[in-house]
Length: 126
Image (cartoon, rainbow, N blue to C red):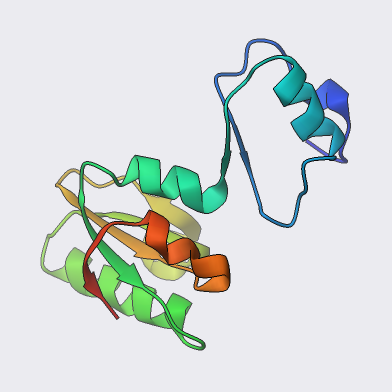
C-alpha cells in the first residue's frame, strides 16, 4: 500500500500492526478503530508471535542487526531452525528480514525505545 488513507483498511482485515511512529489520529488507524479491528504496535505483536516460544532478544545501542544476523547464521550452520525477525534485510535470511522457523525458539532484534523489548519474554538477552 502506498500512502496513508482510510481506503487502505478493509472490513475483512483480522488485525492491524503499526509502527509507533504512527499515532492514533492516522486515517488508517482511525478506520481500523471504527471497524473494531484489533490493533497492535509492531513490538506488541512480536510479543504475541513469540509468546509460546523461547525468545532470544538482541537489544542495545549499536550492532543489533549485525549481532542478530551472526546468531541467525550460527543457527543455520548448526541446523537449528529458529524463527528470526530482524529490523533490516539480511543475506543470512535470503535477503529478507524474517525466517519462519520450525522449532520453539524465536530470535528477535529488540528495541529499547519506550522499553519495547519488554513485550518479548526473553530467556536470553544480548
